[in-house]
Length: 306
Ligand code: PMP
Image (cartoon, rainbow, N blue to C red; front, side, top):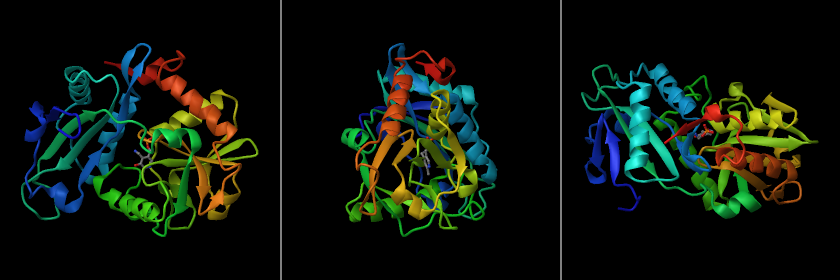
């Protein structure tokens, strides 16, 4: 098949790719009532390992909370199912996508009687924005779409329905010759990318918006903040960043499980810094890849070995 996946775990069973289907009257399909995760397994020096899997699983359950969604499997069951998927398909590295959504019962907006269906798929996935992007950085634009405010919908929950906003912002950017968008929040300050957190470097210090700015509490964001502080950088992790500060930044980069650490070289046709990957970004990117591929033995607690 197209995705190089032959087995998917669905509601407690391993099923063939073509059998992993759901009913057209699924609640989550109509109302966006699903929560999901995106994690990566890396081919490390110590064998295949999922990076910060505990945190991803914890966030999956936490994302369901505002929707009173009870996931009918334990964390251990979901974890074991995923490890088994990686083993069965002999995946050395992979992107991992667990999803839990309200299934079919009735199509009232209330999901009260709907089951919570759960599935997990793993597939090989290279650099989200391209290998070249990791080295040379990407061109982005500030989207004309604002991000939903955390007073309108919980933005710290990774809910399927939220990603229609990501689609609008991302596709607008691509129509305009950019690889990705930066999305401002309702107040007009910098929030994040459609599927990435954002970091700014100025005078050697690092700035990134906090949760009050209607962002997802990114696990890569936390990883980069932790590494940066260990390396001696000053990190302002509750920054309020105005649009204009993007253009005058020394460096900008995105973080995400899919995007990893991707430099931004241009915003709204303005070159950032020297117009290529900056030195602080490169320093953090190197530390990140050395960590996730286990070329260093720090933070062993962040790895779940297959
Ligand atoms: N913000 C949004 C909106 C995202 O979808 C993602 C990807 N999950 C991120 C930030 C980055 O989060 P993480 O580092 O946990 O993948």
